[in-house]
Image (cartoon, rainbow, N blue to C red; front, side, top):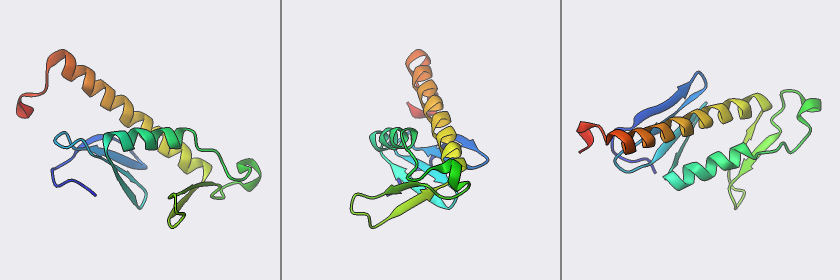
Length: 117
């Protein structure tokens, strides 16, 4: 469930964006027509999952086919990605993780911005 606070854009690319709420710590991943909302732990786990995602079929021989599959544990919902989409999503998530880490380092070094105190 999305939070009710206004999120800030943490990172975006031509393929999507990652928004973060500094008040409640939730992350929204916008990629194509999909919006996924995660706690910080859930976001980090999702990033790990996408980083380690392997094709269900040989992507070289299947070209642009959607050979990367994610399913909920009960297999009631799934997403299928092409190699290109997985690469774009990995890039988006890596950028968001880097910006989140940078924000954390800046907050440790300089303290939070005045509007957050």
